[in-house]
Length: 308
Image 1: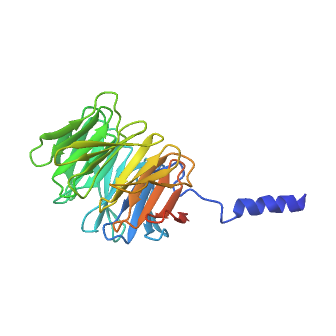
Image 2 (image 1 turned 180 degrees about the vertical axis):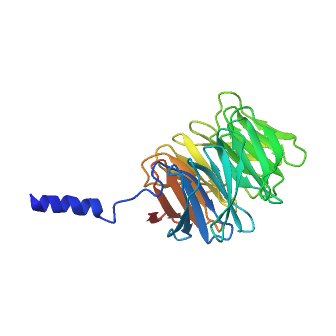
């Protein structure tokens, strides 16, 4: 009996047993543009900063509800986080200190991204994408979506902002406020959206079994069929491939042009967040149970399970 007890105890304390990085689920992942660190946020109301090799460096606390979005500024100096209580926080990305809290003026914010001229944008459950000064917190921009905003992305030149949710996609010219592209009808629910760095290409998780890429010059539509509901999608920075996180726990790496799809398989629950490193060599994956993994984007080899 004593031997059985010891065996069970060892099994419970074995360091090889995976530990969730964010108990409850990971909602957001973002690499700093210099590629040295990445940030994750989830349902435990914390932000964790990791080295590029997946070592936990520090934990940032202060949000009252779960983290829904993360974005580093292009100069590597700041980190923005959005929260399920409708607030934004601006942090020093070097000192890891809270600088400012901004009210999103809505009950829920679902994503955040830095724009040009120290502006920060977020989508929310008030049918809006809004933009604020990250320095003063002053509201500068407001764009209307067909329904709640589930996600947003800015073009690499910071001239356009796209938002998605129930009812499809809208793309706006930030300077003029005009709608320059719209796609979708009431039954189309967009769970994630991402601008590529090439040709204003737009990647859209468009519902069960559908991932769509749009060419930004002519807004031509290219469909990719995936075997399950896509929850998250991200371009590699060079535009050579994109990652799609599925409800089954698999991640598909889909090349643009010729080449076979690659599937990353380890996770057991839906993939709610993915991110490529700036050099495109690695992929970070987070699931709805809070597990975090780091992969080689070329060989599809699992590099490590990231533990808190």
